[in-house]
Length: 151
Length: 132
Image (cartoon, rainbow over all chains, first blue to last red; front, top):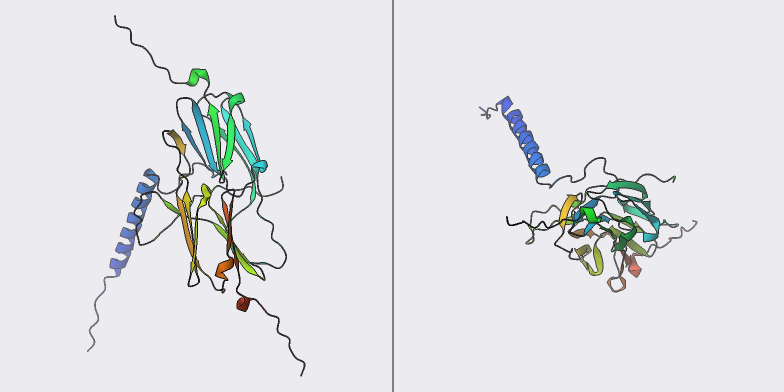
Protein backbone atom coordinates (compact mmCIF):
# COMPACT_ATOMS: atom_id res chain seq x y z
CA UNK A 1 0.00 0.00 0.00
CA UNK A 2 1.22 3.42 -0.86
CA UNK A 3 0.62 6.16 1.59
CA UNK A 4 0.11 9.57 0.10
CA UNK A 5 0.14 12.69 2.13
CA UNK A 6 -3.28 14.26 2.02
CA UNK A 7 -3.21 17.77 0.67
CA UNK A 8 -5.77 20.36 1.43
CA UNK A 9 -6.66 21.89 -1.94
CA UNK A 10 -7.24 25.23 -0.22
CA UNK A 11 -3.91 25.27 1.52
CA UNK A 12 -2.03 26.54 -1.49
CA UNK A 13 -4.46 29.18 -2.54
CA UNK A 14 -4.79 30.46 0.99
CA UNK A 15 -1.02 30.71 1.18
CA UNK A 16 -0.70 32.50 -2.13
CA UNK A 17 -3.46 34.83 -1.07
CA UNK A 18 -1.48 35.59 2.05
CA UNK A 19 1.63 36.18 -0.04
CA UNK A 20 -0.25 38.54 -2.26
CA UNK A 21 -1.53 40.44 0.75
CA UNK A 22 1.96 40.68 2.13
CA UNK A 23 3.29 41.91 -1.19
CA UNK A 24 0.64 44.58 -1.26
CA UNK A 25 1.43 45.66 2.27
CA UNK A 26 5.12 45.89 1.38
CA UNK A 27 4.30 48.01 -1.62
CA UNK A 28 2.22 50.32 0.52
CA UNK A 29 5.01 50.72 3.03
CA UNK A 30 7.62 51.13 0.33
CA UNK A 31 5.62 53.83 -1.32
CA UNK A 32 4.99 55.55 1.99
CA UNK A 33 8.67 55.55 2.90
CA UNK A 34 9.67 56.50 -0.61
CA UNK A 35 11.47 53.30 -1.45
CA UNK A 36 9.61 52.48 -4.60
CA UNK A 37 8.56 55.02 -7.22
CA UNK A 38 9.48 58.57 -6.37
CA UNK A 39 8.27 59.84 -9.69
CA UNK A 40 5.10 61.78 -9.48
CA UNK A 41 2.91 62.08 -12.52
CA UNK A 42 3.77 60.82 -15.94
CA UNK A 43 7.48 60.37 -15.52
CA UNK A 44 8.49 63.25 -17.73
CA UNK A 45 12.22 63.42 -18.29
CA UNK A 46 14.23 64.64 -16.50
CA UNK A 47 13.42 63.64 -12.94
CA UNK A 48 14.20 66.62 -10.73
CA UNK A 49 14.95 67.35 -7.12
CA UNK A 50 14.04 70.75 -5.74
CA UNK A 51 15.65 72.09 -2.59
CA UNK A 52 16.11 75.46 -0.93
CA UNK A 53 18.09 77.41 1.59
CA UNK A 54 17.42 80.94 2.84
CA UNK A 55 18.59 82.65 -0.34
CA UNK A 56 18.16 80.24 -3.24
CA UNK A 57 16.01 77.54 -4.76
CA UNK A 58 18.03 74.68 -6.27
CA UNK A 59 16.75 72.45 -9.05
CA UNK A 60 18.90 69.43 -9.90
CA UNK A 61 18.42 66.81 -12.60
CA UNK A 62 20.44 63.79 -13.65
CA UNK A 63 21.13 64.08 -17.35
CA UNK A 64 23.90 61.64 -18.23
CA UNK A 65 25.26 61.68 -21.74
CA UNK A 66 23.64 64.97 -22.66
CA UNK A 67 25.89 67.62 -24.07
CA UNK A 68 25.28 70.85 -22.11
CA UNK A 69 24.93 72.56 -25.52
CA UNK A 70 21.86 70.43 -26.19
CA UNK A 71 20.06 71.68 -23.08
CA UNK A 72 17.87 74.76 -23.35
CA UNK A 73 16.80 76.44 -20.12
CA UNK A 74 14.10 79.05 -19.79
CA UNK A 75 13.66 80.65 -16.38
CA UNK A 76 10.67 82.72 -15.37
CA UNK A 77 9.87 84.14 -11.98
CA UNK A 78 7.84 81.12 -10.96
CA UNK A 79 8.85 78.33 -13.32
CA UNK A 80 11.72 76.67 -15.17
CA UNK A 81 11.57 74.93 -18.52
CA UNK A 82 14.19 72.26 -19.26
CA UNK A 83 14.20 71.33 -22.90
CA UNK A 84 16.55 69.47 -25.17
CA UNK A 85 17.61 66.25 -26.69
CA UNK A 86 19.64 63.27 -25.62
CA UNK A 87 21.65 62.06 -28.57
CA UNK A 88 23.23 58.69 -28.17
CA UNK A 89 26.55 57.97 -29.76
CA UNK A 90 25.78 56.90 -33.30
CA UNK A 91 26.43 53.31 -34.07
CA UNK A 92 29.01 52.67 -36.73
CA UNK A 93 29.25 49.99 -39.34
CA UNK A 94 29.97 46.43 -38.40
CA UNK A 95 29.11 46.50 -34.73
CA UNK A 96 26.73 44.23 -32.92
CA UNK A 97 24.89 45.03 -29.75
CA UNK A 98 24.92 42.75 -26.73
CA UNK A 99 22.78 45.05 -24.63
CA UNK A 100 20.87 48.26 -25.30
CA UNK A 101 19.35 49.76 -22.21
CA UNK A 102 20.14 53.41 -22.67
CA UNK A 103 17.67 55.57 -24.52
CA UNK A 104 17.84 58.75 -26.51
CA UNK A 105 15.14 61.22 -27.39
CA UNK A 106 13.86 64.70 -26.83
CA UNK A 107 12.52 66.16 -23.62
CA UNK A 108 10.60 69.21 -22.50
CA UNK A 109 9.62 69.73 -18.91
CA UNK A 110 8.18 72.65 -16.98
CA UNK A 111 8.79 72.81 -13.26
CA UNK A 112 6.72 75.11 -11.11
CA UNK A 113 8.82 76.69 -8.40
CA UNK A 114 7.74 76.86 -4.77
CA UNK A 115 8.63 80.56 -4.44
CA UNK A 116 9.18 83.55 -6.68
CA UNK A 117 12.72 83.97 -7.93
CA UNK A 118 14.84 86.57 -9.68
CA UNK A 119 15.12 85.15 -13.19
CA UNK A 120 17.90 87.55 -14.25
CA UNK A 121 20.22 86.23 -11.56
CA UNK A 122 19.63 82.53 -12.20
CA UNK A 123 22.63 80.38 -13.02
CA UNK A 124 23.10 76.83 -14.25
CA UNK A 125 25.91 74.31 -14.28
CA UNK A 126 26.37 70.75 -15.50
CA UNK A 127 28.86 68.60 -13.64
CA UNK A 128 29.34 64.87 -14.22
CA UNK A 129 26.02 64.72 -16.01
CA UNK A 130 24.07 66.43 -13.24
CA UNK A 131 22.41 69.76 -13.98
CA UNK A 132 22.16 72.22 -11.11
CA UNK A 133 20.13 75.40 -11.36
CA UNK A 134 20.68 78.05 -8.71
CA UNK A 135 17.72 80.40 -8.55
CA UNK A 136 17.95 83.36 -6.15
CA UNK A 137 14.74 83.91 -4.26
CA UNK A 138 12.83 87.15 -4.74
CA UNK A 139 13.24 89.50 -1.79
CA UNK A 140 9.63 89.01 -0.66
CA UNK A 141 10.03 85.24 -0.65
CA UNK A 142 13.02 85.19 1.68
CA UNK A 143 12.39 84.25 5.28
CA UNK A 144 12.47 87.17 7.65
CA UNK A 145 13.14 87.41 11.29
CA UNK A 146 10.51 89.26 13.24
CA UNK A 147 11.46 91.08 16.34
CA UNK A 148 9.16 90.71 19.28
CA UNK A 149 8.47 94.03 20.92
CA UNK A 150 8.60 94.04 24.63
CA UNK A 151 5.51 95.82 25.81
CA UNK B 1 11.76 67.61 -33.13
CA UNK B 2 11.14 64.30 -34.79
CA UNK B 3 12.84 62.09 -32.24
CA UNK B 4 10.83 60.30 -29.60
CA UNK B 5 10.03 61.72 -26.20
CA UNK B 6 12.36 60.60 -23.46
CA UNK B 7 10.74 59.12 -20.36
CA UNK B 8 12.01 59.50 -16.84
CA UNK B 9 12.59 56.14 -15.20
CA UNK B 10 13.20 55.16 -11.64
CA UNK B 11 16.75 54.12 -11.01
CA UNK B 12 17.07 50.41 -10.46
CA UNK B 13 18.37 49.58 -7.05
CA UNK B 14 20.90 46.79 -6.62
CA UNK B 15 19.42 43.63 -5.13
CA UNK B 16 21.82 41.31 -3.39
CA UNK B 17 21.66 38.90 -0.55
CA UNK B 18 24.51 40.74 1.06
CA UNK B 19 23.81 43.95 2.85
CA UNK B 20 26.10 46.89 2.37
CA UNK B 21 27.61 48.51 5.40
CA UNK B 22 26.47 51.93 4.32
CA UNK B 23 22.84 52.93 4.24
CA UNK B 24 22.92 54.96 1.04
CA UNK B 25 21.40 53.19 -1.96
CA UNK B 26 23.44 51.46 -4.66
CA UNK B 27 22.04 51.56 -8.18
CA UNK B 28 22.42 49.38 -11.23
CA UNK B 29 23.39 51.65 -14.13
CA UNK B 30 21.73 51.28 -17.53
CA UNK B 31 24.30 50.06 -20.03
CA UNK B 32 24.90 49.62 -23.71
CA UNK B 33 27.37 46.95 -24.69
CA UNK B 34 28.49 46.47 -28.24
CA UNK B 35 31.12 44.51 -30.01
CA UNK B 36 33.35 45.55 -32.85
CA UNK B 37 35.93 43.44 -34.64
CA UNK B 38 38.66 44.55 -32.24
CA UNK B 39 36.95 45.24 -28.97
CA UNK B 40 33.99 45.17 -26.65
CA UNK B 41 32.64 48.61 -25.72
CA UNK B 42 30.56 49.33 -22.63
CA UNK B 43 28.65 52.54 -21.96
CA UNK B 44 27.09 53.07 -18.54
CA UNK B 45 24.96 55.96 -17.29
CA UNK B 46 26.37 57.01 -13.96
CA UNK B 47 25.37 60.63 -13.34
CA UNK B 48 27.19 62.33 -10.48
CA UNK B 49 30.30 60.17 -10.78
CA UNK B 50 33.56 61.94 -11.58
CA UNK B 51 36.69 60.55 -13.22
CA UNK B 52 38.15 59.77 -9.82
CA UNK B 53 35.05 57.96 -8.62
CA UNK B 54 35.21 55.13 -11.15
CA UNK B 55 36.65 51.73 -10.43
CA UNK B 56 36.91 49.02 -13.07
CA UNK B 57 37.93 45.52 -12.22
CA UNK B 58 38.43 42.51 -14.45
CA UNK B 59 39.21 39.12 -13.06
CA UNK B 60 38.50 35.67 -14.47
CA UNK B 61 36.26 37.08 -17.20
CA UNK B 62 34.21 38.95 -14.64
CA UNK B 63 34.03 42.66 -15.28
CA UNK B 64 32.93 44.86 -12.41
CA UNK B 65 32.21 48.55 -12.61
CA UNK B 66 31.75 50.72 -9.60
CA UNK B 67 30.99 54.42 -9.43
CA UNK B 68 31.20 56.56 -6.36
CA UNK B 69 29.06 59.67 -6.34
CA UNK B 70 30.71 62.90 -5.23
CA UNK B 71 29.38 64.21 -1.94
CA UNK B 72 26.32 66.37 -2.24
CA UNK B 73 26.33 69.73 -0.51
CA UNK B 74 24.24 69.35 2.58
CA UNK B 75 22.40 71.99 4.55
CA UNK B 76 19.70 72.29 1.93
CA UNK B 77 16.09 71.85 2.72
CA UNK B 78 14.48 69.44 0.22
CA UNK B 79 11.14 70.57 -1.21
CA UNK B 80 10.50 67.63 -3.45
CA UNK B 81 12.53 64.62 -4.42
CA UNK B 82 11.99 62.58 -7.55
CA UNK B 83 15.28 60.76 -7.65
CA UNK B 84 17.86 59.66 -5.14
CA UNK B 85 21.59 59.67 -5.60
CA UNK B 86 23.88 56.88 -4.63
CA UNK B 87 26.73 54.78 -5.86
CA UNK B 88 26.60 52.46 -8.86
CA UNK B 89 27.60 48.84 -9.17
CA UNK B 90 27.26 46.25 -11.89
CA UNK B 91 29.16 43.20 -13.00
CA UNK B 92 29.20 41.09 -16.14
CA UNK B 93 30.64 37.81 -17.23
CA UNK B 94 32.54 38.33 -20.44
CA UNK B 95 32.49 35.70 -23.09
CA UNK B 96 35.44 37.19 -24.94
CA UNK B 97 39.04 37.00 -23.95
CA UNK B 98 40.16 40.53 -23.17
CA UNK B 99 43.60 42.03 -23.36
CA UNK B 100 43.72 43.33 -19.80
CA UNK B 101 46.63 45.69 -20.34
CA UNK B 102 44.88 47.68 -23.01
CA UNK B 103 41.59 48.45 -21.30
CA UNK B 104 40.68 52.11 -21.65
CA UNK B 105 38.07 53.99 -19.65
CA UNK B 106 36.69 57.48 -19.98
CA UNK B 107 34.09 59.37 -18.00
CA UNK B 108 32.20 62.11 -19.82
CA UNK B 109 29.01 63.94 -18.85
CA UNK B 110 28.18 61.21 -16.36
CA UNK B 111 28.62 58.37 -18.85
CA UNK B 112 31.36 55.80 -18.44
CA UNK B 113 32.87 54.37 -21.59
CA UNK B 114 35.05 51.30 -21.28
CA UNK B 115 36.85 49.91 -24.30
CA UNK B 116 37.96 46.32 -23.79
CA UNK B 117 40.25 45.19 -26.62
CA UNK B 118 39.94 41.55 -27.53
CA UNK B 119 43.02 39.45 -27.08
CA UNK B 120 44.72 38.47 -30.34
CA UNK B 121 43.57 34.88 -30.03
CA UNK B 122 39.94 35.91 -29.68
CA UNK B 123 39.74 38.07 -32.78
CA UNK B 124 37.55 36.63 -35.48
CA UNK B 125 39.33 35.09 -38.39
CA UNK B 126 37.96 34.43 -41.78
CA UNK B 127 38.26 30.85 -42.70
CA UNK B 128 38.60 30.13 -46.32
CA UNK B 129 36.63 27.24 -47.63
CA UNK B 130 38.70 25.32 -50.02
CA UNK B 131 37.08 24.20 -53.15
CA UNK B 132 37.34 20.44 -53.36
